[in-house]
Length: 64
Image 1: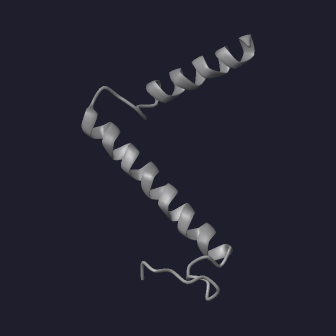
Image 2: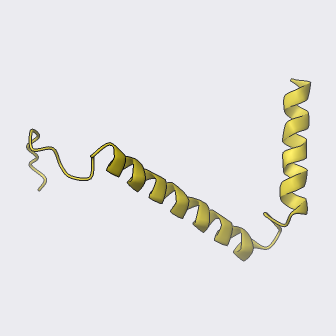
């Protein structure tokens, strides 16, 4: 537990000292926007790899 807390403290110090997250709200929003964009792109890549981009011809949906 002590090791986890020290790693967490070091990570918090590194993030704040590097200027990654500051007290400036607009700057932080920009970081969150980039993180959300990366997650969306990762999701699209996984859909491509798993061939889930198109609806399965075996399923019939009433919502189309």
